[in-house]
Figure 1 (cartoon, each protein chain N blue to C red):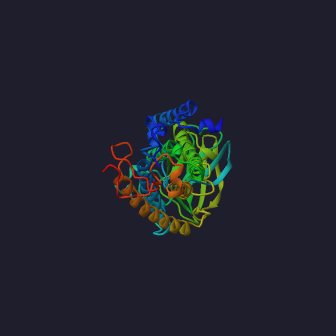
Figure 2: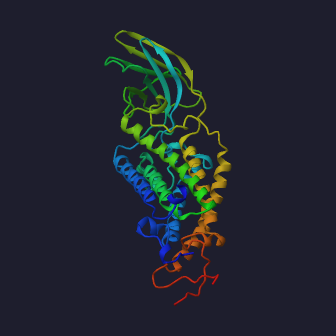
Figure 3: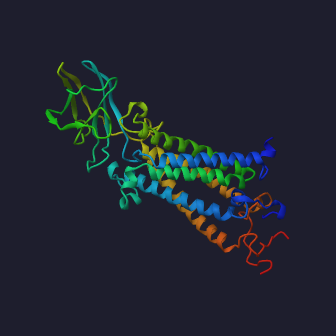
Length: 189
Length: 194
């Protein structure tokens, strides 16, 4: 529920976790789903359509191949996703907060992996003596599969957190409208 | 105290948030504008041979997908581990009984790379030569492609259902969120409990 006047948050982050939280959360989830679908496209191309890996460009990669040969899109997305998780965290309370926090921590590690890829490219020295920039866990799991897995294990606790956060019983402790039941009648309308 | 820190607008909390946002912005500026690494799918390098002696050199043999071009099989990359190869150093590679074209790598400094890809079960022989002599590394056979230890088909199936379900849920809730006026914009939300 929306709190009383003295409870209403101020400032950008305050509003983001108060009156704007519901809309911000769903916009954020839409971005996450779109990126998630892109990863699924690429994985399906490799594992279901059995395309050669260099030919598995995902959906956007067919239109803009540069997105596949550059780490910029994935790095930027990892950064945006981490920033979103951190910025929207204060709006979560109770058990949902723990799930959101778990997602934030896992995404933090995912961001470290992408940052390391960028640093390797900048410095010119790669992990494990590899000729190309390499993720920490890449010796065990190929990169498309590894990053699909990272996105999945970030996505699941995030969805659990959102589901818990939007339960009607959560309305009493929320400072936003996320769990407020939808009623057509508006006071003062 | 944790409880205090969790209070909205607590100075420490606001400071921490500013620091995190600042760090994220700095990383964005530093890294997103810099030379970028290659992305998913292109570069899964795997070592075929490490620390092999070739006269004065220690070399490693890697298999990696090319960054450019249309080759759909991974190239071979010969890397010098400890010291940069001399100017007169040459690397030649034979696949089976046939020599293949080898060029200095465009993407890996001090390395040499085949122009064409090599396939599973190909027998590869690497020879390093310089003015001091010529050294051949014992032939190796290209192993099957690197595969995931994860049950990928199951993982993809679960992910597709999960993504579809969440997208459906999100579409409904997003629409509802936009139909609801923002609090504090003249219309108050009716509290169903009152």
